Image 1 (cartoon, chains in turn brown, orange):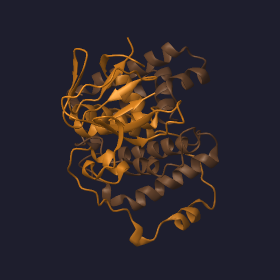
Image 2: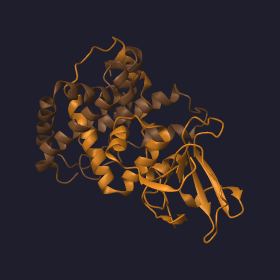
Image 3: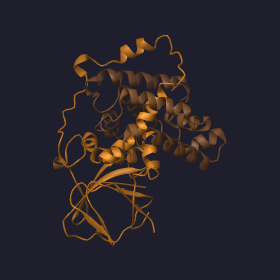
Image 4: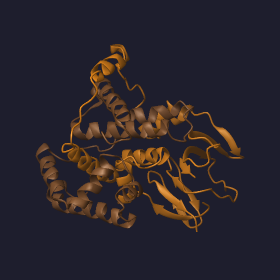
Length: 150
Length: 186
């Protein structure tokens, strides 16, 4: 998060994530997701909440706060990837081409949209989309033995 | 349950890899994020696809360059921790017609809804967003009497629909429960 709109914002989000992990620890279910995936979801949701607070949505509506606070655990019913498979996935990510890795990193780690990635890197929007799609396809293909039909 | 920001009656599934990737990276509007979260609760296939993207993200997270936090970071975290008794408890019912995410937003299930009449036979409840902020996506619930016909109308922008119970028909397309569908302009 060090690149998310200045260190102050990044620290605020990290602080929120740590508090969320602490207070929501009883909600974490290793059968549903790895700890890293759970923390990623919380971090992403804090980022969405940050954008909402600083965006144009109507922040006076108190109901808006609850959704982001409570949806961290519902995505996958089954943690379909073992720790060993996660290590293999990590190796596969490192084998992607540098442009693919950069696009994946900017999307997942910096929460940037395809358009924002295009603007920052000077790479055409269509190329950014192709890089991300092809990276996902390569990972799916190389991990198919471990993931099944996802 | 709909999110809208185009007049039309062509249907498209909204759970494409591109949309689910955007979901996983937090790039969708809040309203669309909520709709896909609801769909992920209902559909194992959607939740598994999102799970893959999130797992890729978590794996990439392991290799991110670390940076130092400010000296008083942990002090601030400890100060901001809520009292022990305030640790979150999820007291909402775990079953019902509404997905858990929707119940979390509403603070209750569908039985306890307060509806506003929209047109005779149709009631509405605004869930997220505000009609005055037309550039923002919003979510609202609709309840219609069985067998009724909605007056001809249009929508600004794009509309996604998730039927919680019952079904409805637009032209020759029928919207059934448990599948988020996109209604696009034609």
